[in-house]
Amino acid sequence: YGLKVVLKFLDEVNDGMTKPSSTNRMVRRLLNWLQCINDLLHLEPIDTIVHGLFWWVTLCLVLPFFGSFVISAMTLMRLFRMLYRAVYLQQPLEEPIKNPSLSSRELALVITGCDSGFGRDLVVECSASNKYRVFAGCFKQESLSYFEEMENVTALVVDVTKDEDVSNLAKIVFDWVSYSTADCDEHDGETKHQESHQQNRPVRYIHALVNNAGSGTSGLVDWLGMDDYKKDMDVNCFGQIRIVKAFLPFLKRQASPSCAANKSNKEESYIDARIINMISVAGIVPLIGCTPYSSSKFAAEAFSNSLRLELRDFNIQVVTLNPSFHQTPLVENLVDNTWKMWNTLPSSIKEEYGQEYFNNNIVKSLSVLDISTWRSFNAVNDVFKAIDLRRPRRRYLSGMDSKYVFSVHRLLPDW
Image (cartoon, rainbow, N blue to C red; front, top):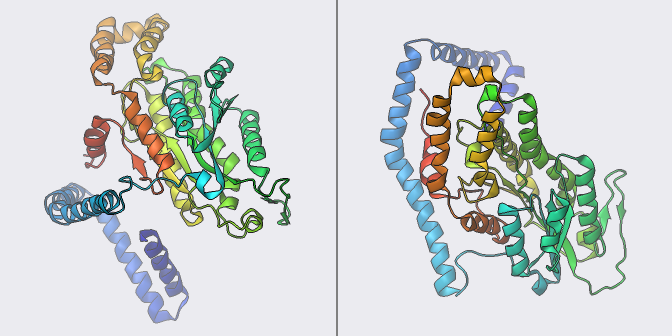
């Protein structure tokens, strides 16, 4: 809504610049005033005074009254919906996706990074729910054997940094969907309908993309090379973009009423699809000693937020997850990887920092992870909620510190 207001204002300004001279002069005068005010706000001590007054009014006057009212209203509304469903309807507190088998539908999940950690645990939970067909992308060939006994899981090797692997994943998923679904030709705009051999087959849709594949490199800036930054950026950010771009045209078509898939099967457009991007608390609060990881997660966070705005009118939800440190291989190997990094540094760099600096600042800060890593099932449950709820939250913060420390830290002003 705010974006629409701004666009409307800009349209009025543009109209004013082309209208008769009186209106034109008024608009130009307003713009000149705004330019002068902007210039003044960048001069000292005006900048310091106004910055302090703005945040004093915001934190001391606006938030205690207006903020408390809004937060209380939203909390009460959410609790009322939960109580209504639990007491009156005798249903779960939050509305889940309707079981596809009850509506002659089959829903697919595409999950990357399933070798271990969150990804593997999530595949197990989704498989156990018996609601979804899961396509699990693993980085290593030997990881595929873990899913052999799961009948509703198709595991395959997917390196999200390789276009050919992502294209192969998309083809396999599209082939699974297309046995009973027409496709909309995106090249010439013509609609083609593939008749199903069995009319009683359920209609298939892609329900969710879960971008879970991740890479984490630790170390200070001048300890690392450009390849370290490229590696994390290619997996954590460009990998998510590559997956989204491979599936986005299909997600948009299946959500469109004009698509022949929906017409031929006499189904309404599928408006419950969602894209779920695993970010990190490192994507909202910078962390020392892991700049490649944090930089890539900030980029992925920005991509996800922009994507959410772009897909709002297509009825495709975008959900981000920002877990703090949990018991996963990525976190558990962080200390060992940092020691390996230190041991391979040139002697000149080691002498510049010194062993004492490394022990007191790097090792001690990482040792906190031994007591501040949370059980991973809570983060996995949050991802499953993002998949399984009809109206998931836009953001899930997993971990007590992520919910109540880092989330507040990012809202405070910078000085």
